[in-house]
Amino acid sequence: MECNSQSDLVSLRDFNMEEDVEDFLAWVGDSQVAKYTTWNPCAAMEEAKQFLVKMQQAVPPHESWFKAVCLNGKPVGHIKLELRTHENGVRYGRIGYALGREYWRRGITTQAVKQCLKIGCTDLSLESVEALVLPENMSSIKLLEKVGFQRSVSYYEYVNVKGNIQQCLLYTFHGSHVI
Ligand SMILES: CC(C)(COP(=O)(O)OP(=O)(O)OC[C@H]1O[C@@H](n2cnc3c(N)ncnc32)[C@H](O)[C@@H]1OP(=O)(O)O)[C@@H](O)C(=O)NCCC(=O)NCCS
Image (tube, rainbow, N blue to C red; front, side, top):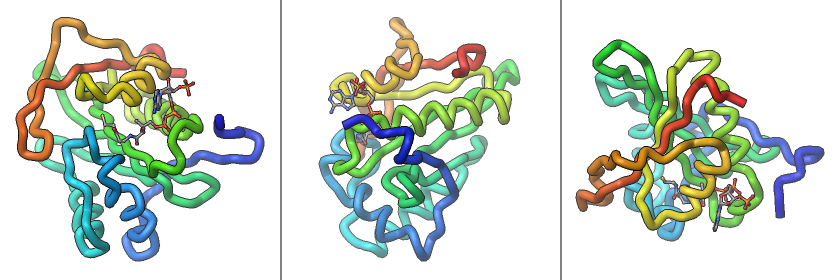
């Protein structure tokens, strides 16, 4: 069922460590959600707390922007935008996201990614936003294409996925296309 924009509100906000960790565990503790992610699912609350702290930390030289995806105020997923700089000084972003399984296929991440692109390309003046995705992650690929990301046909990047180095596809959204 598509998210009804009349009554269902998708918003992005900072996580509150104490109040949100239980909701956070609902999706980061789900092995189905983590099937194609770089991270392993969290087994318990303490692990989820540590993971939340880690996700919010920037890994130099990149800055990090990490938000809860909320449905009518309740955190149901997360979205991350890593702020990077090309060798020529041009700034771009790397996006990542995950959503609780019971909320899949309702257009929630489509709305969250669009909001994130607006912030990245308008407020933060990024030239582009990239996403790396495993070739078998069709849900994510279809989502990126729906939102307007384009696949770089000749470019792959090797990524550490749960300890295995795997080839990921690169998708790029150009800032001038912001919706
Ligand atoms: C990828 C993910 C975030 C999609 O979130 P979502 O809120 O369900 O996506 P949306 O409802 O906005 O769907 C957007 C489009 O993606 C495609 N899509 C999403 N889920 C799909 C599925 N299970 N099967 C086929 N297509 C799917 C559809 O084309 C859909 O558009 P449509 O419903 O108009 O046909 C969600 O499946 C998820 O959390 N997966 C696990 C974590 C993950 O893989 N993260 C990405 C790592 S790169």
